[in-house]
Length: 217
Image 1 (cartoon, rainbow, N blue to C red):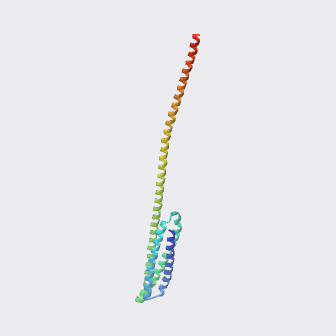
Image 2: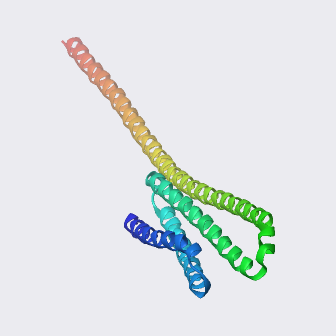
Image 3: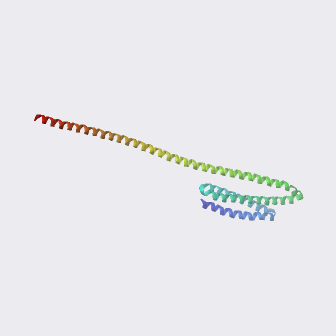
């Protein structure tokens, strides 16, 4: 599992290095070459987003006790991605400004404040989206923890049920043993009574025999 995550990390590092280099070149180019570079960077950023999604899925499959380290690494990669997107937007805005200034001349510079507001609003929307993603991730992790707790409770319930069944079986066996011991004790008492009665009869017979023998003499 972690080996897949590390493979994604290597791809992420390679792509982000290429994007950083290209974003730095965008303001220095013009015309069709700049347009093609902007489109290329936009495509690579989409690949990075897909990589982050794959990394996120891999992290969710990692056991909870080992997940913290990978979550921290993934968080830093997402922050790096956000910085790349901001740098790319600034470079695209600079590119748009240059084209607009070529078409409108000085009138193009008058919308600088509006573009700044637009960029600020875009960043706000991105922050809200990130908070929603973080909330969703927490909800998913909470659901996973809840499922594990329910599974543990189910296992404990089965163990308790088996223990209860064994106790019932033991109680039944003890009841049988008690009845057997009671019957044995009753027979022992009966046998002792019979022995005493037989002893008394034999003793009486001996006494009578001696008595009649003496009387006959």
